[in-house]
Length: 476
Image 1 (cartoon, one colour):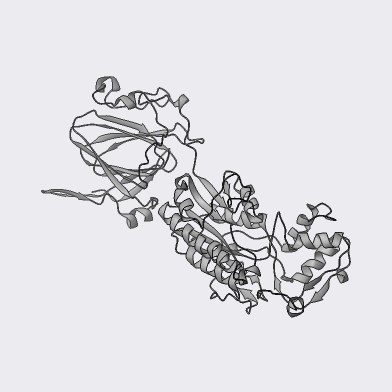
Image 2: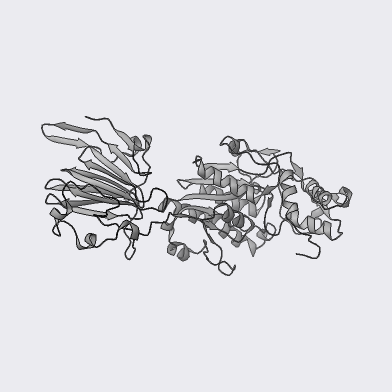
């Protein structure tokens, strides 16, 4: 009896599994699929949803080569078969082939987009396969001629000898490799694509599809608070969802008008996405805020209990908790976001350019986060396969107050530091309807750094950001 083992092949992701078969005078027994043992040896936890069995009565039955848009785990329950696979995915391995003789002790994991085929080597062969998605009517996908000369699969029984009795008319009519349109990879989906962070994510993930709310002007629209719209979306086309959508009107969130909108966008929508992610085997990346904390600690860690002060923070905290129920998730908690759009730094630059001397609070302390750096951190965590969980992401360097940031902007725009008037939060809020703000927004970055990613200092990135801004006099 062989030991359970997993063997890589020339096709990336195509794995041959050697299965122990326990035999005695009565017959044999094997574990066709054993999640814990097999994933420990490197087999993907592909979460099958359906099992199919193809019974082949006579020797020489030949089926394939079809590249479905789902993963398969194939084996034979009785008899022997010659299995052949051809990579029909876009990329450098397109056209690569692998063949293996299948018996009850051999199984093969076939990734999405790899053409799967087999030929029975004896009568009464039961060919079994697990799949991790359901068949969808009307969908077409790549297929290849069994006798393609480029791939040249060495069928044990010549196809001419098999004839039409052993090969379907459909398989006899499949195209050559040169005529096959490769299967495109699943692509990331960026939700909230027209916002500051969404734009940075699309730049970082150039193959991604960006969506935003109806009426936003986006080419592709999706309202994730609309159950019908979410149900109708073709999630099988994606592998990662990056949720940059949020209701960020912190003060309006405290009002009867803003409160339900904030809860729908910041809590209900992430909960919906968490369910979608599990149903469709997606990685869910969700962006959160330091407003989930009350700001009483000078530095916040990922495991600090949530303690939001206002409605905005409460809704973001609820969204964080919902996202962590997804099997594969990353919650990226950030602070003081600066990107392509209206933001504090851009406003201060405009005020500096137009001769205004603003009053800015000096008792709220944190670090700026530039959207390009936040997007790069998200890409890094996905690339290295970081464990699911919460990761805090801001730019590095010494913490500053909002007033100090304003002063740094003013100096870089040729104004004096003293042109920024420092005031307390209480002074600034006098006579205004304002939501509470955390006094301390500094995020501990050690967990992110442990994955091999170090964020650039905030003031260093501020220089680069301001250098990219044209004069803002009269703008905004």
